[in-house]
Image (spheres, one colour):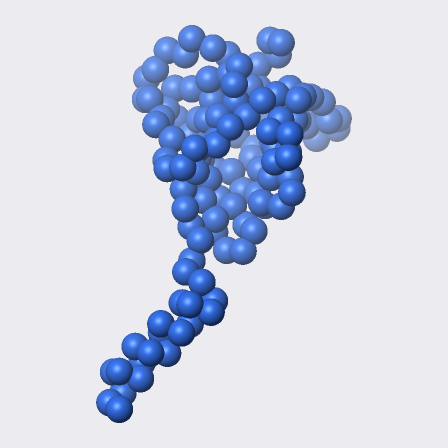
Amino acid sequence: MNRYALFGILTLALVIFVGAPANATTCLTFAPYCDQIQVENAAGANLVGLWDQFCDGNTVHVLGRDTSTISLGTEPPGFGVSVLFLLNQSTDTADILGSDGSSIFFFQDDTPWASAPGPCVFAVGAQPTKPPSTSRER
């Protein structure tokens, strides 16, 4: 057997037994709000992505973990607070928390969320018809 055939068989066996890399892109949305989060698996349960915080197409980076509760955190430049998304996968509800470094508060709690395969459509310059999830409107 030549070395190329052996390499091909070993590569195929590795993909079959270990699996292909899971880096599928997913778009997360929050029912009553305009903002979206685009995430993909980075390695294992680690997630990386982009959050369109003000629904205007300008995104900030998010980093998190995909376990029974998806957790995503970020600190948008100029916003003045860190933001943590806790998405419960069994109830499809999210808690969105903020911290100014001295206290923790809720932006939203038990907010419905959904996911769709593929990237989010970030509309640059859009004028949102709904508020973002980090607004104080409830």
